[in-house]
Image (cartoon, rainbow, N blue to C red; front, side, top):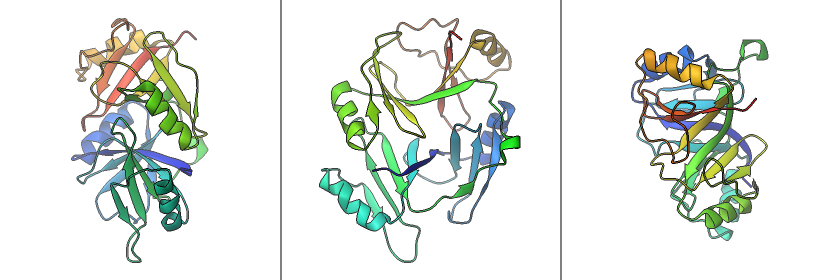
Length: 238
């Protein structure tokens, strides 16, 4: 229903500052095309691709590529999904946008906007393994049913360290978090995350003190990127 996942799209007023931040963590740049009319860059660790957009937009957004987007928009509306916008004219890249029950923006575009770097250039970031895009939700059952209707597989709720449902896609896992988090998060796990958190604090990175209840702040943390994206750092068992 959604197509193939492309990127987590974020508004980045200072792309160079954001690029320097992600590259310092081990992300590498991808080669972008000319479809976008605003300044645009992409960084990736081989599993997560993050699109940095120097324009006004709902951020962060989840962006998929779906061919033949014009007729597909009608299919989405048949599921009682209300489109926020629809750009399907002949003189522009086809794009539609809508939201999940929690307000998370979802975008579908008709073609890729970047090329992945060669496999030899990719490496895991120093943050470890990208687990999922985490979304704070008010109604866990409703949100799970919504993502399930879009073709993701919503698993049974997990209770530790907080209540969450993972909606799995071949290219992206969406974590539906029943927590008091204010923002969506990019969730990473690493067996040595506690040591990495100390290093990041010593380097002066911004680390908001807003972890979900039940998470040990010595082994877990939030890291804020220059453009405002939150990265949730968790200590993996292995």
